[in-house]
Length: 152
Picture 1 (cartoon, rainbow, N blue to C red):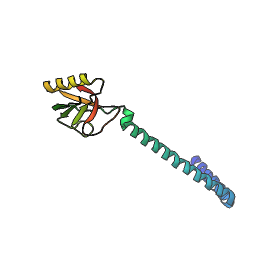
Picture 2 (cartoon, rainbow, N blue to C red):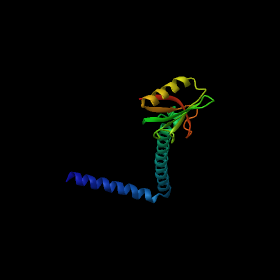
Picture 3 (cartoon, one colour):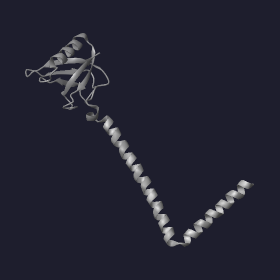
Picture 4 (cartoon, one colour):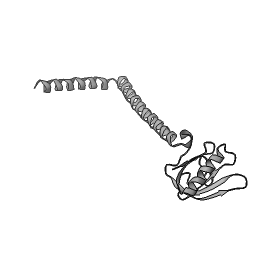
């Protein structure tokens, strides 16, 4: 009973306060402006959080943020082609990175000989490999330059 009377008293007091303010146009207008400011701050705050979330997600999946794209799946080498300029191209049996099956070991890469040895060893043994695209070029499709090869 006490709770019901208390709530009714609070309701009437609130109603009287609203009635009083509704008679004062300047006060009523300033309250409306404050409400609109609060709503605008919420919207801008939400938009800012949304924008920050988008930037965070994009930076996580951006090749430059990751350093370099690395294949998450392994594949077997089905063809190795050394070229006269010293570049080595090889073909995998599946697209595991950069939407291609053909990758290149650059003739000027510092670890070229070691990568070539790993590719030949994996090819001859029939072992699967993972590939890592070059940090300087990233994914370029067919013939993407590599900076490392993982033999599984």
